[in-house]
Length: 89
Figure 1 (cartoon, rainbow, N blue to C red):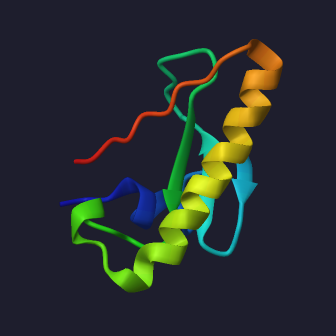
Figure 2 (figure 1 turned 180 degrees about the vertical axis):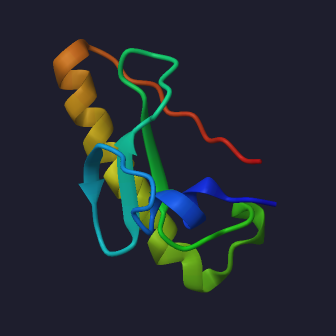
């Protein structure tokens, strides 16, 4: 199965508007947004499923949540609210 995040976005083959980036996390504006403000936050390591993640992945998952919290705070301050969705394929 093709993974656009690992194959195109993280390596920089598909250009995106980066909102936040750390060594382990990338947050960017969705390329085809459903909402006015639609941000995608991903780990830079491929994880097939949250339920299949290992204990070694725990700090990275916490970092994803930390970046999400920061971005959500900024969006809430700008527009009064923010919703977080977790999407798995």
